[in-house]
Length: 574
Ligand code: DGT
Ligand code: CA
Ligand code: CA
Ligand code: ZN
Image 1: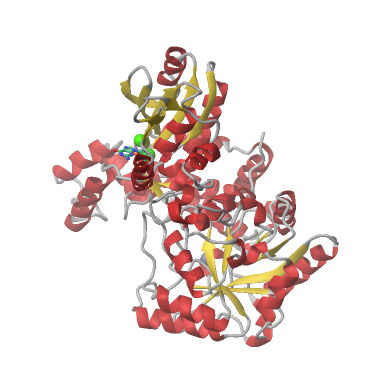
Image 2 (image 1 turned 135 degrees about the vertical axis):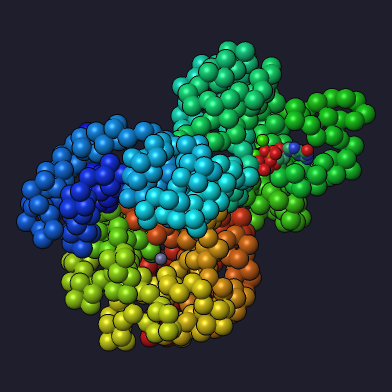
């Protein structure tokens, strides 16, 4: 069984506290679990290095037992038991703003609320406002939140879709009768949000394949089941994902794949091109209009060649001039060009893995160098490093670095730009750090002028190498702060400060649109995962895809350079 890492253990302890609150256990017991979670969070060591959790202040015998079980089995029987005891519909209510364990516990125990509909009914019957600690305003707020809660968002984020896409691919790989398949549509083009997933399959036995698809796990509803097209809605907890499957013969596969990869605008332009040649493009092939002869293709390269084009990557098939550009090769940044990841966290701040684990994972990916960049002291909620911790960590990083002759580990920091524009560490400290990132994580409400002043001060500091996630947005959840990106790009060019394309699929910050503008202005971009866990290093793929949507070339992206080249660039003004 998989051992739990530190972050998973902290999450489990926090969940136990919430569930105990819902059950109405005494607050002493509840806070014991919170204290234990905090104690682990405060300690910078990995869970393996903390040999005896009970020795930490804030962790008692009972909570230490739970931690040990999580370390050894990856699970907690107490947590499981609590989950089983509580109605399934109750836990999703925790996502409603303003409702924590305490309040949900009261609703459950005093009003027999067990899910969304019983909560709505209790509000409508005005029973909630009379509970101690609630009130008329709270009741109104809950009702308003419930209104939003039931709505389905029009488009799903790529972060939600990646695991679903992977799961469906695994299932198709196991099915009988499929010759080949590929994911098309907006997902293949790398858009930030998608309406649905579009799979193209080739088969000689559409009936057999269709039957397997229509009976797969997690189906909420079969929307349509025709001879060659099946539309499903799959459900994973409260996430509902529409998926289209289209089955064609293997000869037709390439033209169908191209057609359903889109975009619509790209298809329209290519069809015009065909018309000029006296041809018509359909899903099934290219038709010679006078003879009716249908031509099919072995590959998309061959398909594009037929129209006098080289291969057009899906990411730029948006009808924005790609037919003019791809008359000859126009190489975009490729995942294989990436030689490092320059933004990641460890257990020293709010990451889930130790320095050594991050190093090992980066080496496994074939990188040549990397930077360890934990949070700075201002960011207390993320366990930002005090100066003392920072110095000790960097000593540790340098020691690790000496182990390798073929790999370089930069010391680093993700330093907060404080609300008043000052930086979290003094010159004396910054000058000794290899890779200094500056970020805004606070005072999002400030006006654009104030935000820009904060950035200006950071970028003019000779030690600041990069601005991370420049807008602070979280896709589908928050817009970020007010930033004038045109001006930020200008300042980046003037000060030789790198701008980040944060590859976390919830962020993609800068977006494709803005990295394109940054490249045009001559700014440099780093694509980084901001990984808080080794598994997140994999988001590099999503970042590169986004960069390709912004037509980025290899030269623009600093983590395709050698470590020496990058070091020279960041030390130019120091
Ligand atoms: P979305 O909205 O995120 O699902 O975006 P797409 O691009 O995946 O759109 P979808 O799923 O409606 O259709 C997949 C592709 O199929 C689309 O990119 C282009 C092609 N397609 C679908 N309907 C039409 C159409 O009416 N005209 C043309 N030219 N192409 C279409
Ligand atoms: Ca689609
Ligand atoms: Ca579709
Ligand atoms: Zn950050």
